[in-house]
Amino acid sequence: DLPRPLGGLVMCLQRCYFGTRGVAKRIHRRVYGDSFPWDDFVRTITLSSTLFVMIGGYWLLRSLKDPVLTALCGVSAIPKAKMLSVFVVLGVVAIYNHLLDEESGFRKEQLFYVFGTFYGFLFASIAYFLNHPTIGLANQVEDPSRILGWVSYCGIESFGSVMVSLFWSFANSNFNLKQAKRSYGMMVATAQLGSILGPTFVNKFGHTLGIPTCYMVGAGCMLTLQGTMWIYIKMFGAGDSASGEKVKAVKKDDEKKPKNKAGILEGIHLFMKHNYVKGIFAISCLFMVEVTIVDYTMKVLAREHFSDEFPCLPYNQETGEPMACWDVATNAPVGLSTEAIKAFTTFMGLFGQATNTLSFFLSLFGTSAVIRYLGLRTTLLLFPSICLIVIVTVRMYPTLNVVFAAMMILKANSYALNNPTKEMLYQPTSSNVKYKAKSWIDIFGARGSKALGSVVTNAFSTSAVELVDKGSLVGMCVASFLIWNARFMGKKFEEYTESGYIVGESKDVDEGDGYGEIDEDGDEEGSSKNVEMASQQNEVGDTSCAFYDDDEIGAEEEGQSESEAGDNDNNGLVEGDKNDKAVVELV
Image (tube, rainbow, N blue to C red; front, side):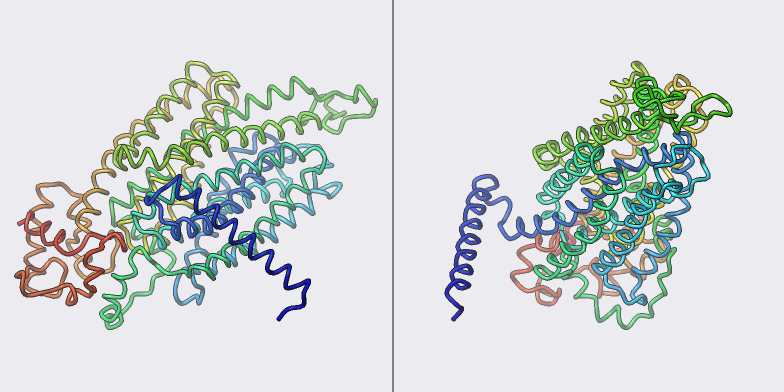
């Protein structure tokens, strides 16, 4: 019914769409076979597009973060800025947790729009002021009182924490364990592709377009990620597939019970109550102490290198004009030359490119394969072991090239190995742990770990030799503890997934001698208390741990259809006979 030219165009677009879709499905079938269903593949790619834009924008801005702060406030401001960011994100996480409460009126996916708009406006404003002749980069005098440098640094740091934490919380609520094992590697690989393009843009166009324009591109990414999330919600919705069936089964009972007001400190309460959550915190954050020490060592060595290669002189040797970085009163340099700042920016862009390229290939070809063949329990041990080896190497060979390679290995493996595995650890946890406790861990815990690392770097910042000597000792101690913690968490993860226990679930039994607290205290004491708890629940009858004869209860009475009873993978939970077997073994 459409006019001939328009109808022909529509038909052409339809043929292109279905042709491309057919080719993509054939490639997908050849690469993945039946192990990765096409619908799950499309769903993963669609959600990954949000992470692609988010991480791409973040790494673009991250490549500018340290050069801008160094140019405005001096390199010595970096450790202080890391410590300041802890207090900045404390306010951000309070707002974030308040918006997570049902009383706020916001759904989880709407927070992408709220924070995306805020950070888009913030980075656009920073881009504008960086062009100012006295406030911005045109003024080459390094002064710690220049507020724009601190706002830029803390804004980028808080964005990386809040938005990435929000994304993975959303993903953990929409993918069960089986889906996560085959999807998270691709998500990380897609994100790393964005993280390669971000620093590449800075490296290629930073000199020609200028830093303020690059900032404006980063602000544009904040608006784009809102569009990609809107597309995902329209196509697949925002349901909690990881535990949706279980939520429906207990919904009526929960409505009858009085609800406690959550509050912004509920995440901290869950963290203090459950050792499993503390273990996730250690895996998620403590390695950042080592990364912060090695990262600052690399930047100190890089600043010394580029300040020697492009020294600040009283007059420009080519134009004969006075250089803004030279103080006439003291007859000494007070900052980096323009060429040194550009070289430092290019160096950081190259670092981002190299790191994320390595991480991309590790994520695409290594993450899912390693988890599949070694299992999550063994994979958890790989990253802290790599950290220990890297720290020892830096201590033995403290040169710029070695430290550069060390940071590449640490960063790439943290993205390719540590991030997907620690996200999978949230599978046997409640929604409040996935969102509220995770927000405190990823935002405040991560900032706190970086601040702890900055305390070490700030204490020994006067000497690169002393920084390597003392800082490496701290790093080796942290890595050794993380190896022990990884063994503990691998064991607990297997116990909880096999039994179907959910950490942080709101049940009356959790208020007393809860299962989570029992299991984490010790095998002997835990077993006796578990038997007592199972017996008490058996008397109540209406619990998942009660004893029934085989002919007393069926799948329909458990809140399942017959098809659901035969397919436990749909919700990632262990139910039915496995629960009965676990209780019988306890008794």
